[in-house]
Image (cartoon, rainbow, N blue to C red; front, side, top):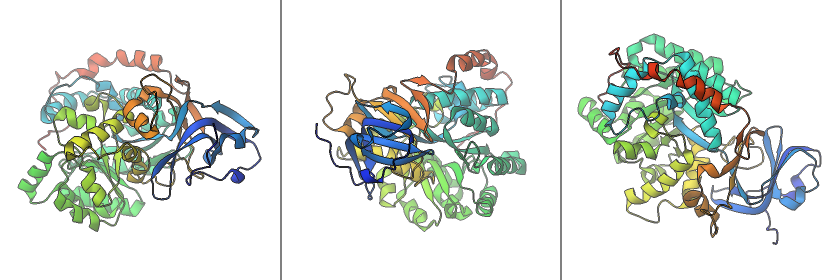
Length: 464
């Protein structure tokens, strides 16, 4: 087979230094982005990694004789930027499958918020470690987490080798202590785990954090150079209730508090309206939205209005939410569902294309988290967060179009190898940093106490 010339998004062969590489992945089909973020694929290519960064993407023959500490033969596989889970609650895997087939208010008030009063730091540690293992196996290399006992989650990230943006959630009902704890955590843990951990302030939502606390959060974000991660306009009912009670949408509430002038990640946004677009456009900070389509289908919500947000230039990253509502942390499934649900929502089979879905899973997700230029593409200078996906399975073959094969035929279980910062965390489906049987054995002993609701307490009351 002739070797195609490098794509515009790939490095030139002559740019590969002769000194040894840390890692060479060779013989694969590499997903590359051009200067307009359009996606293409370079066949029989190689990815060269040095010092935790991608050094070059070149034709495989160009590095056949290049010395390397580690080589991976990736023939028959596609190399993609590691997937990014833009919004989850990792430790909630401990509640997976425990609250099913319920409307959201019953899900919160009768099941999840009573159960969360039982959580110990040890439970969060176990849940976070199990979640990290699941995400590594599914090709996720970065996740944005919004939960409690976040030092335990940060320790799990450090142990697993993943990259994460972490925020300690708080409610106005906790008083100033909740907000202060979130700030303390964000300042202490940002830049840790070899720089793989970034942090955010994490007010829970516009309906559980009052206007005064949202304004204070915006001030703290500006003073300390921190982004903000919160739930807002999660569904249309919340938006309607906000309009009825306050005369403004949740997005208008964010604007009024000054949060749209900080870096803000809005979880879900299925209730964002057309009237919110000029409000978002006036924001001077980085604004992103995280979309988790599986959960919306389960709760019978609308979906995130991607086409509307694209018209306003707002990046929409892909997410899973917590496994208590989503049942898994499979961003691959989120990508496939995004492509399908958007077609149905818009009544247009031409929207969303497979390449557009891959864009949401890569560069748009990185942009939504404020990590553009660091992750989200396989290009020189970016962190070496790479996944290898097997394209040889009978459910994928024959491959007429690589983008279509990845989005509509491949599955997360086809991810063979996961690399973060040039370090291999999973090779040929074998986890190298976490022991799942050990984690699940310890977790099983805690399940009866975790699910006990006889105490009659809950951490909040949900009424939208």
